[in-house]
Length: 352
Image (cartoon, rainbow, N blue to C red; front, side):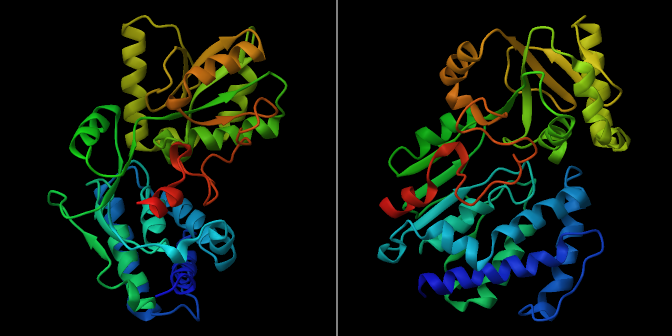
């Protein structure tokens, strides 16, 4: 099985996923093995929603839409053209996945297989319905993948390298347990937005997508704002208002009520609009339904501050603040080459 065959298989998977990107799933013609897999994936989607209340239809559809757009022949070839992938000596790579948002570990899964290795996947219990089914689809459209994909709930063993994603606490365990293996160990990260007060209404409205998509559970979600002194939060709250129906969703509302009660009982100063609270806080990671903020004096001072916390930050959302910034509204639309924690997964896999 050569690289073109692997690319072709994942491009077909992207076409398959394109049927599940809107509320009314649309079965399309010319999708390979559709009669075998279409209804089955609808059932897995139902199971995923029942198992994890954060996996709402809209968030699942958003994830499927993002991956269907990424998994095209053109995008995959453009991503991989800089690498000498056909020279790979196949190894067995273990992946320990998070489960905070739908298919959050898919990029690692894709990277291992597209680079010519075998994969052993240990999933989070929060997101275990979708990927095994999609893996089976990939095996059907490209039989060369059969025997190269394993899912396990047991202790990992008999592997050559590992990619593990977890919290700062689990990362310490991973670093100890996998110290004899080539590894990528990912820890907690959050994303921030730098505002100047000169943002347009469209930019602030786009920022609401970075904050609320997936309920803010992803590392690419903005959890903290940096704002100048005397910043007008009324403009910010107005731009967030389109997301106000989120308070009608039980899990979000329960978190909102709980965190609001904690802040009020602790007499913390905060502002809120009925579905979002903002609180001045030095931390990068904010609870659900809350955004932290800090004031800054100068661009130079803030740049220096953020540079000291590079390992805590996944994305910086801004307009003209730094060269590696993400445009407003784009944090949950990464390119295939936007690697988690800035560590090139394909380069890692080519060296093991």
